[in-house]
Image (cartoon, rainbow, N blue to C red; front, side, top):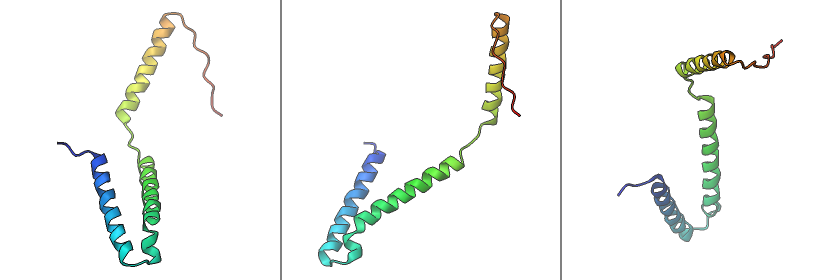
Length: 93
């Protein structure tokens, strides 16, 4: 049986809830009572940081970029041979 990511998160969630209920039953500390809310906020901040990290360190593929440029040039030449006149490209200032 393969353990999926869902099963890992579900196991963690169950352990967290049991741990929280045991702590909550022993004392009514302000931090313990609001621990699930703090955990959700921490998870949200972690997720936001992880997404921002992945976006800023997005890998570039130079080989794929060159291949795409070659394919575009090849397609433009093929269309010219077939008589298609492409609109003029706007020149940047």
